[in-house]
Every structure is written in structure tokens, then in C-alpha cells.
Image (cartoon, rainbow, N blue to C red; front, side):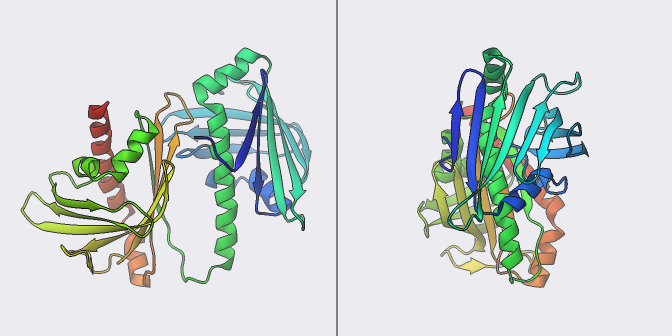
Length: 337
């Protein structure tokens, strides 16, 4: 599904993607040229970026590795041809035998817009040496979808910086983030997360079974479920939906619960956060192999200092637990396919 906030124009040799950001031009420029900010947003959903060298000046190079949510690494080289702060960047992508086999030139413009000139229209125009070269990056790397996802992540990064600057909610907490690629259509992966007959087949610790599950999929609605462990012990949980954008984004508050749906503490960890916020995004995989990329972001909310500390110290266990759950979803989707 196209990103409604970005605009795309594609011709035989060109791809142009533009987006308006609710941030001054100088901040958008900084996000594009600061190597400490680049890893926080560069790349499609689920990708991370490791910069080896970044020298933003005419003739300077940016060498970096993009790591996909499936672990695939993509080595990249950008050579800057023109740097006019904060108005325009022009660079050459590719041209090295150790980089991805794609070569094209990009012009990025940063234009003040809005009544007060405090918003920014960013336009990325990529020009390829031939139609075949453009078609190759679209076919092999899902380049148009990847470009839209990248600019969407830039918008989220700029928004998070603004929100953090104005926040007074107390000490920050490190979110837990996990991404995976599933070889299944996005609509099917969405259904697997939002329909109880699917959730009961994979959303549980290994060895546990789902005793009961009731779904009310609407903002303010709940998913209430009960699990029985291999030892016979029962555990209940509840989601309260805050945001539902089919089939792109699911946001809910997660708590432990009792059989009646009342909120309870973690049965064995009294300082585990009473409430956690889960945000799951569903996107086309902008990399080799296609499929669907899920990015899960998990944070405590309305938490005490002790709860924040417990959450921060539990990332390794979360990685193991969620990793096993994602393996179960992978196997379940493969069975459906």
C-alpha cells in the first residue's frame, strides 16, 4: 500500500520521491548529514545502518552497510558531488566493486514551506543510466517502496526528537525493538496478529496452549486471552487497542490480567511494568526476497523508576522470548502458505 504522506513520480530512467516534514529545513538537513543521526532512521522498515566513513563535502565519501531484518547485508558507497547547506545535496551512488551493483545519481533538495516557512519539503530525485538499471533496483530491491519507508522513518525520527525535547515524563527508557521478515503477504501477516483463530496457534510461549481468546478489534477494544503452561498453571493477559491502521500499524497497551479481564501484576516479577506499549508495523520488505517486514517496538508506560530499571535490564530475555515467538509465527505462516 503506498505511503499517503509521500509523493512518487517514476519515468523510464528516474524515480522521484518527496515528503513534507513538520520540522525546519536546518533540522532536516542535519538529520541527513549527521552520522550520529543516520543510524536512527536511514533505510526501510526493519533495516539498520552501520557507517564506516562519512565525509559530507564535494568529493567526500559515505561508506556504509545496511543490514536487513533478515540479516542480509548491503554494502553501499555514496560520493558527494555537490553540498549546498541547507538547500541541496547531489551525490553518486555506487561505483565500487565492493558495493551493491547499482549506479545512479541523486539530487536531494530541502525547501522551506508553510505559512511560517517552518516546515520542509524534501525531494529525492534519482537518475539512472538506463531504463534497465532503474527497473533492476525496483525489481531486486523494491526501491520505490524502500524510499518511501525511509522518508517515513525520517519523519518519525524528527517527530521523536521534538517530542523528547518537550517531554517531562521522567527518565527515558530504552525501547525493545525487534524486526523480522516473513515470506507471506502483508494482509496474511496482519490477519495472523489480529484474528484470534490465528493468534491462538502461535502467540504463546513454547509448550503453552491457549485456553480462551476473545477479540474486539477496534480502538478501545481488547484482546483477552488465557494460557495454560506445560506445568498446568494458568496465565491471563490483555491488550487494549490504541491505534489500528489496516494492514500497516497496530498499537496496544499490554498487561497481565485475571480471568475476568482485570489488570494484575506479573505473576513472578513484581517490579515488571504494570503496563507496556506495543507498536507493530507491517511493511513490504524493501530488500532481496520480498515478503513482509514486521517491526515490534515495546516500551513501559506510566512506569515507576523500579519498573523502568527492570525493563531495561530484561532486554536479553525479551530477545530470547520474542525470538521464539517469531519462530512460531514463521512456522505457522509457512504452514498456511
